[in-house]
Length: 104
Image (cartoon, rainbow, N blue to C red; front, top):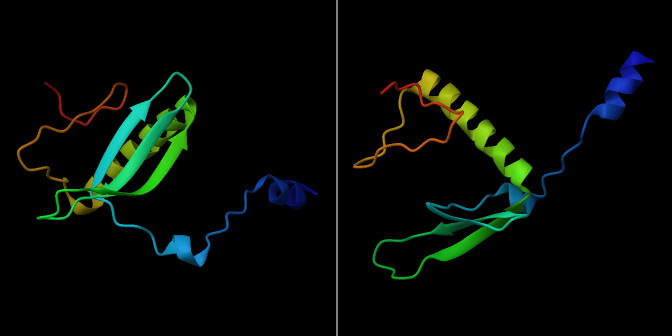
């Protein structure tokens, strides 16, 4: 009975083939209103004066904060395994309570 209950609580996620291919994005624009966060993922190419939005994700504020935490946790894991991610000529930004590990 316990096994059936665990199976009922699991979320099954379907990944359609066209979505599984993914979209490359090297630029993100984040805007918000009182009820939503909107993240537009775009691709900027050298010599092309226009960036094309490839995907838009709309999140409730609570989900945006969960995403922030999940990204921070995964970046910490990544850097632990592969080394620091370097951003040339830019100081990394963080939002409390998610420290970067650097103490000022």
